[in-house]
Structures are given as C-alpha cells and as structure tokens.
Image (cartoon, rainbow, N blue to C red; front, side):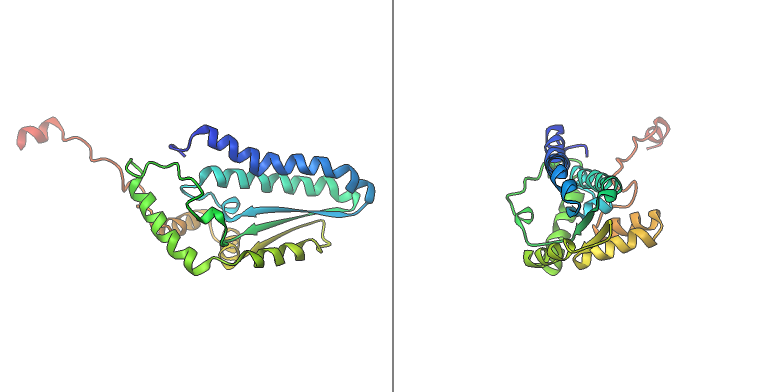
Length: 202
C-alpha cells in the first residue's frame, strides 16, 4: 500500500474495472434486444480477500465483483445473467518477471517481501494450473442459467472462497498471515529509545 505509486493504482483500475464496464455498456443494448446472453467476469482470489503486497490488484478485483453483483440484479429482468469466475493460480505471464514489482526490497518492508516471494514461488510450483483448465471453466460458465453465479476455479481459489464464508474474519486474517510468513503484529516495530533514567542507570 505504502510503496505502490498512485499512477499504478489508477492503471490497474482502468484495466481491471473500467475496461469491463466500458465493454459491457457497449454490448448491453444488443444483448437486451436479443433477450438472452451471459456476461462472464474474471476475478481473482485477491477479490475475495485483500492480499498483502498486491493491495491495488486486490482492491480492483473486489470492486469488479461488487459491480458485477449489482449488474446481475439490473439485467436479470431482461433475461441476461452474470457469472463471476474467481481464478486461482494459473501459469500465465503474471507469474513471470514481466510483471513489475514496485516494492523497495531493501526498505522497511524488505523482510515481508522476501518471505512472500519465497513462499509464493513454492506454492506456484505446487498449485499453478495450465491455462486450458481455466478455459474449460469459462466455457462451462457461459452455459449457466441462473441470473447470477460465482465459481471458484482452482483448488486454492476454492479453499479461500470456502474459508471466507465459513471462518471468522479474525481467524482468516491470522491464517493468511501464517500462510504468507508475515511477522506477527508489532513484529517489525522499532525498539523504543531508552528513557533518560535507563541511560543514567547504564
């Protein structure tokens, strides 16, 4: 949050939120006229739960989901539906060096960055799915008949979605911290300066 440039925040929201909004606004008149159709929204685990080190991305995906929920209510009377696909980890370019990292790896957040990166690389090797599996889920989603549906794609996305529904927020927050290897609350707080009395006694 602290180190991400505001311009990057704006760019993410332009791509993740305003892009789908503009495309949908352009398509809706013909879809309403046809009286049928479905809009598939590609979300992410970051839209389910705000994730450390990708706060801007998480915020943009959460905004996308809230918009899609409202959209579904508005267009259902015209015979149209919305499906949100909550994507887990897939082997795409977002997992490569092509995705910039804006954190200062020698600054105050260096320790959390290093641990998140280390664990992330391990989990990607274990959990990342081939893109073809997401394509299959997308094709299935387009055949949905309910006015609104949300589908988690990938075991990690399914587990997080389930946990967000069943676990208390405080517990889920603690589990995410442990899973990502983040320091305990207050763990990076600087040591307070010694009091005058302590200095004199020393």
